[in-house]
Length: 96
Image (tube, rainbow, N blue to C red):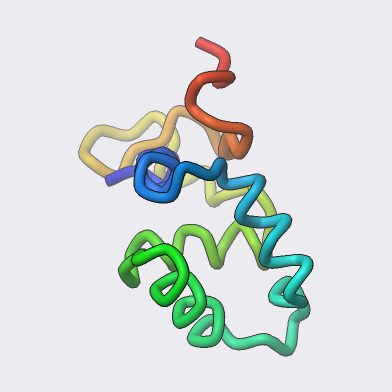
């Protein structure tokens, strides 16, 4: 599953865009560098039922923003992303 596909699935499961979840995480202080991924994963599981894979995709954008490593962009296979910048504002508003 590509990074963007993880985020799109998170939106389907939670009814919230990745950006909305990031804003909630920020209001809880989870974007602070000292907060461990496990704390965020526990919150995502408890409040939204997200598993580790989906949770880690969200941890990345909470901690590091939407930029991802370009090594998977344009490659073949299930982990290929179209861009090295993830779309956080929801599938319905994603440019074609």
